[in-house]
Amino acid sequence: MDIGAVIIGDELLSGKRQDKHLPFLIRALAERGMALSWVRMVGDEENLLTQTFRETFASGALVFSFGGIGATPDDLTRACAAAATGLPLVRHAEAVAIIEQRFGADAWPQRVRMADLPQGARLIPNPVNQVPGFSLHDHHFVPGFPNMAWPMLEWVLDTQYRALFDSTPPIEHRMLLLDTLESDLIPTMEELLQRFPGVRLASLPSTENRRQIDLGIKGRKEAADAAWAWLLERLREQHRSWRPIEPGA
Image 1 (tube, helix red, strand yellow):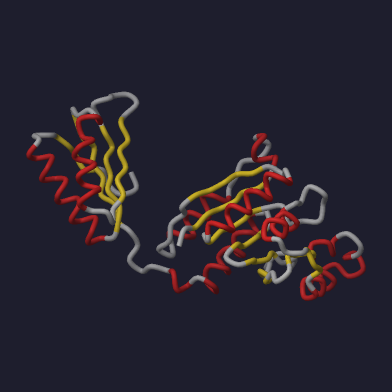
Image 2: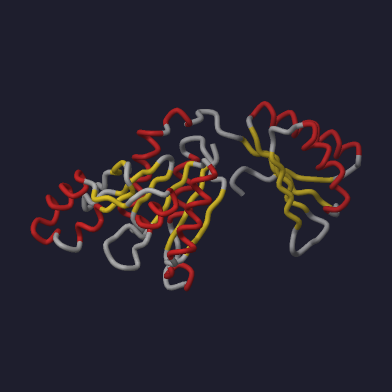
């Protein structure tokens, strides 16, 4: 199952604020043996945001959306998610009750707008100020505030996607190839990927020394180990020099 992220806000695209959600999401997924497939960063523009959600819903991916679920006019996520799925925006009774309990009479007439959700939406509990996020199919919408969004994200993963957790996450082998041009290795890379379709290969030439390459193989242990052994043998046959790169380096 592909996993994606939609990170929303003009302030991110203008540089007024720096995104913090992406690094956290990558870590949270990795801790559960999962990995992010793609990310989109979108401004507060109704047509663009609606089209983005049309595409992400159609993809069938598990998607986390950050931001835009408040009550102000620039909070477009709830309406755009409804429009993207062809669902009406309706006032969610349980969300109304939570917002009323949190804010009392001050819930009306503005804050209660946060209970207007796409029909059929499920609530995501908010441990900070109780105003819930919501889920629709495999899309999960949380606030832009990290202190709220991150525990809500982890709650979604731990309560709804535990079956996808992998206790044996992918491993990675890496080396620094010396005195080698990347173009010279292309046939070897192509053969490796043909022989071992379950692995992914990353080739990063040095920007300072064009005859050095950071070469890595990632995949399930059995496949990655087999591909690595095959690669080492080919490099020996080609009389190439290399040294290992430690994990996390």
